[in-house]
Image (tube, rainbow, N blue to C red; front, side, top):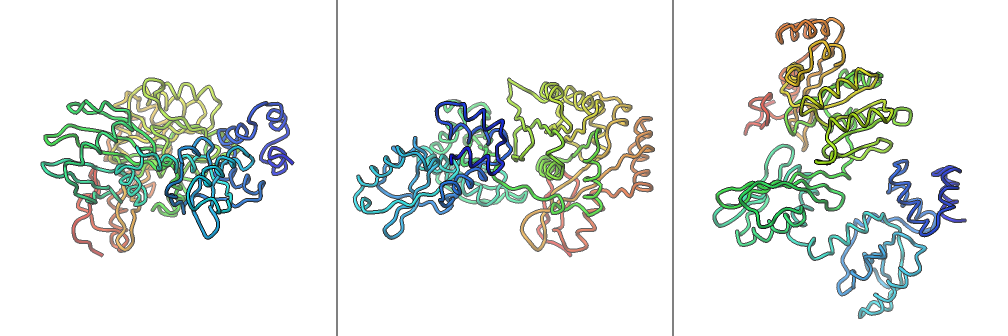
Length: 487
């Protein structure tokens, strides 16, 4: 039985796809693998495990990879074949295609040419293509530098940002973890230029330009790294945003929303049309919340499409598109998506009036739209839409819920929790928005009739229970805990 027939037997591919792939010439094995992963019906991880089952081999995620000294890894890279560990009498080898005889012959030659390895028997494992490629990248001299060690440490510690700041004789490396900057290292300034150049080369920036800000991005180990440089009196300050695509989504029930809030969010996410807005400053967890809500939806019966800058999580059976500056922006992307028969549209952020108008248009024409906007509270989101020249009547007719949130540190455990206010928009509140009632009147109605509680009230409740640390101003753009905690 071929691997293709095995996949059909496992119901991974149907008869039509089987026939299409069967008629293809060339490397059918790689073709079907790449095709299935790109379609999104099965993850690369699941497909590799099926491959291991077919070849009766074990699967490895290469978490126990250990470089074997004196081995010519460069020769093996093009075969996606990676010796990753030695045990008594054996060398353990990760391979993408266990049926590739040429790749196995090449490994045998490499081992026999190394002193002390010729007597070792090979034990093969199946690994993901991306995992094998990532390990070869790490082995590459340019990517096994000090830069990679810093990034790997940031990923391991779940840092959201890396700050590299030069001073007179030293430079510091700081990680932002759970919203706070933590100093990691102080290094001699002599090492700074080498590190800066390495980062700029990886991000395809101009290494000779140090007087103007630059921005770019690159990827290490399936982690997107957004780099920004800014000139200072001692050199370029560098900040790296870390976007780990392997990071698993947190269930919406575990983010910090109350049971009542979770029920409401799930109920409105099942509606056929309207707009759900998440708002708050940068770093307030809007994207995580909106993805977690997306994950609760039925992705088999609803066509869910996204426009993001960047794609921060990969969600199976969701058509995700990353904004490419100069090629596609949010406004044009929404126009294109509307021709793709979507049921649900995620617009990563409303930044301008063109995107705002397209988002409203999408919600008016029978689509559920989820989006984020920069505003301090839920009522501020209404004012923000007005700034983007959206009329009060369109806001009233289409916006169905606004969620404003912050992230605060937990008191007794590591990590952060969401503090949120949810503005449910019923018919009466919609009429008040239409007639441009004041924020005070809108808030009073929501409190008296809709059970609305502000972020400050929700925070005080969690503070009194001893769940969170004390913060000076919960409504500021960057919430920072006080040095002493209460509770």
